[in-house]
Image 1 (cartoon, helix red, strand yellow):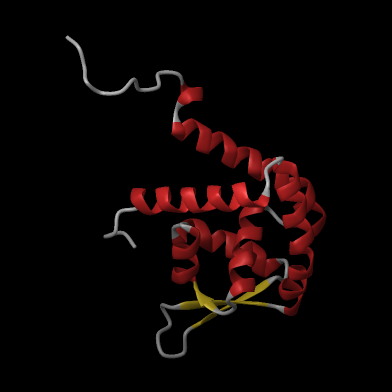
Image 2 (spheres, helix red, strand yellow; image 1 turned 90 degrees about the horizontal axis):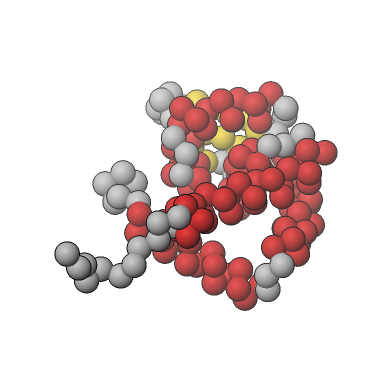
Length: 151
């Protein structure tokens, strides 16, 4: 029986899922030596980058922006609060809503971000145009893979 479908990859190394997975892990490892002196993990740094762009967000909004469920995000936020980078407070009108905001210590870390970003860009060995195109492509892929009823 012959198939009219194009040849599909059989090896993990040839599959998009493996390439994205491996690249994600490599990116996390690349950030570690820069974040360790700041006392941050990569997921904590991502939370801070979202808050640097727009301070004071609900846990739900942060989770949607980061693609993280609240049961994963809450312990991460508790650790950031314990280290003095963010503070959490319950909503006055609705105590079920929890708001997260930067402390002055968390806001000050933003000064380190441009150098970290510059070093990551350099470490990729790719030009800024290629990286911008890659971000756009991955964003489209994520959008296509994300069910609209979940978000």
